[in-house]
Length: 296
Ligand SMILES: NC(=O)c1ccc[n+]([C@@H]2O[C@H](COP(=O)([O-])OP(=O)(O)OC[C@H]3O[C@@H](n4cnc5c(N)ncnc54)[C@H](OP(=O)(O)O)[C@@H]3O)[C@@H](O)[C@H]2O)c1
Image 1: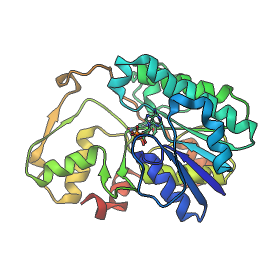
Image 2: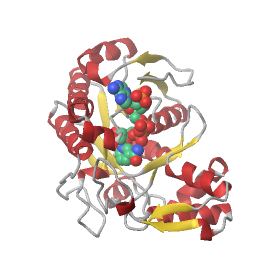
Image 3: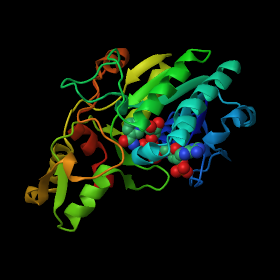
Image 4: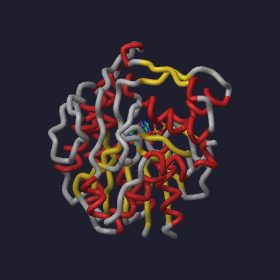
């Protein structure tokens, strides 16, 4: 398999490169502002220039493209909706169409933020999206654009992504910050009024490539099985650390002033991916244990 990872220097993208290499596939990538350390063929590519993506396909001749690039700054999307729509809506639709024209498989990545957060049970794939901020709106439009492009594509929605960046080797995202705070003995204020299904990037990358291996297309939720608050995530980390849980302080999303509204509840139901692959998704504790040496 010849795999091209768009956004190879992102957290998820670096993990898709890593897992593709573990599969023994021929892996190539694109990057935007920073060239990753991987020793693989790399091309600089800006999503804004999505019309030129066919030239990237011509250069690398992949069988499979996994699009991990996006405008992921939720507040930045709120203040620059035009750019959010170009990167998160127009680019994936155009790339899916260009892949279909060359008979290249296309995998797209979306988000739990397509939901409004009014549910209190994990969202399944059949639930109607109703984004409440520009980021989620642009990502939902991207899902639709990919779906409407020629060809059968796979789209995976993730939630609260964290993990080890496979080019830098560094723990990235929420637990990196919690670990730093715990390590320095500083109090860690954590929300108790937001619920997510944290998605370890390495686990998501493995699941995506397993779905490809199984010739699966359509829409799937890919996350861990645990629907938790950031506070509860902090407790799992403190437990692994053997750290004093008294350092964890209950906080509220109302305490922070941000440009974009976040859904209070965006846990994803993973039944469909579990039955498709015939195995359970990990719990949050299992995910943390899996990479504890890097997390420590
Ligand atoms: N992070 C989360 O909590 C979360 C939750 C749910 C879903 N997702 C989705 O998961 C996917 C991967 O996200 P991630 O967590 O890996 O985010 P990330 O680490 O921020 O990676 C995003 C990548 O997109 C690239 N990018 C940004 N603007 C670009 C442009 N104009 N042209 C080309 N590339 C550009 C970035 O490159 P530069 O840095 O060089 O610009 C970066 O490599 C995204 O589709 C995101 O919407 C993320």
